[in-house]
Length: 336
Ligand SMILES: Cc1cc2nc3c(=O)[nH]c(=O)nc-3n(C[C@H](O)[C@H](O)[C@H](O)COP(=O)(O)OP(=O)(O)OC[C@H]3O[C@@H](n4cnc5c(N)ncnc54)[C@H](O)[C@@H]3O)c2cc1C
Figure 1 (cartoon, helix red, strand yellow):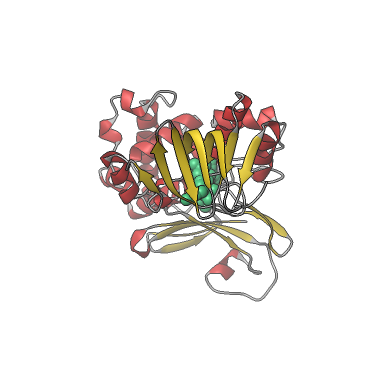
Figure 2 (tube, protein in one colour; figure 1 turned 90 degrees about the vertical axis):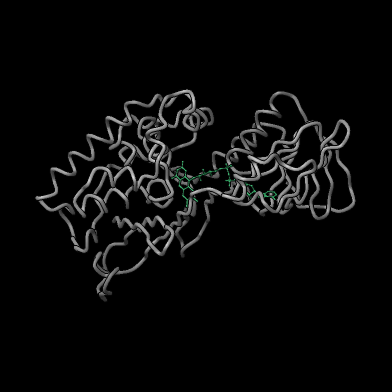
């Protein structure tokens, strides 16, 4: 593994841009197929939106980004078995320890008042029936699902739910999907529910995390294949010349028969393409994606209430999952 060097032109069968899960998987597959493969990333580490940071908070090693996998995510689970990666026991579904819903602060117990339990049942039934319409193993565009491809907020509005159930649904969606309920398509979330085997399973029943961090899987994948890795090499330009594609970084220019770009749309804008990307792709880059989730970890002594009004006595640590949104709204789950 090396950083960017200067003044050299290297020729490969394939250059893969971006060393997140998509790029590492593509590079491994292509290299195992016998090609010479270069994997380039702008950062000084692999993993992209997954980032297992050692000693991130005192002696705690933390997953700063993507963390949980679910048995319904068959592709990643297949990789986990392939390399014998250890995953932690699934976390059981737990209600948040503290909820602020519909203006009520509830510590422990059900966050839903008795008079809204009927609405909760109606919401779950509607979500489950809608998820059952989806075949998660087929492309969504091949299924007649246009009715469900609306903002999740609009989907909820139609149900005329009580304020606590309405807010709980919005917050859970923001937290699980990492995006604001107004921006997220109900179809996206329902597809995830269908793939997970049900709405409640999606909400956390079978979540598992990597014992040695998500990076342990990526390292195992790269160790199996003969992939050359360059870190700290932001790609600035990708140009097609007769028979070749050139990948230009600040210091180097790589040539290849093929380039695979796994850079997410949100940060693809600064990369110049020659010939330019088509209109549809440019529009997608301009729109970026709906994911705005941030992850927070609260390490504060005291009871859960300490998070809203500090107390001095020592107590358990609480984990905060925050789904950020536009307009200053955010969903937040607090778990011991
Ligand atoms: C806070 C958070 C929590 C999440 N939780 C979960 C979870 O629990 N479970 C789950 O399944 N998913 C989760 N996700 C989503 C998951 O992390 C992503 O879907 C996945 O990591 C995306 O992988 P990728 O390879 O497509 O993209 P990325 O991981 O974004 O990889 C793209 C790579 O491209 C590189 N790059 C960008 N621009 C350039 C350039 N110009 N030149 C060279 N390299 C470049 C980046 O440095 C990056 O390494 C979470 C995401 C976040 C942010």
